[in-house]
Image 1 (cartoon, one colour):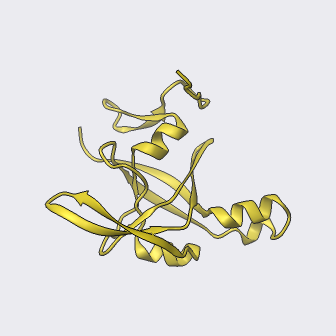
Image 2: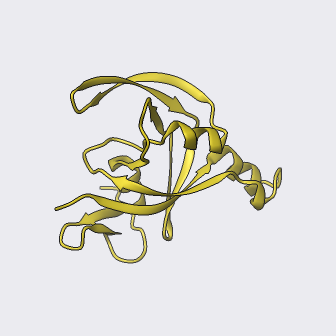
Length: 136
């Protein structure tokens, strides 16, 4: 199987909630449309520094993360909303120095109820066209 990409929208989560409660208009929600590498072996969302700046996200903390070839330091940014088709997830993305590609990892994929279809090499709903949560 080759590399799998997905067209997603990443929004500043603080803006999303401000718009929901009428503090700003929907058009003022900062958002970036991007083509993300889908990586089921990665934990969470990784965004480039340029995306963090465009969304106006502050850095909340730093963490050590395992990457190919060793460990790196990742900055943990304020939360974002990730949207793929009719599904969304909120998470705190990592920003890794030098990373130029957005990467969609397993935790937001699980929350959106999506999987990688190995034959089609694309994201699909794990339980059909509508998300389905699992509690057991």
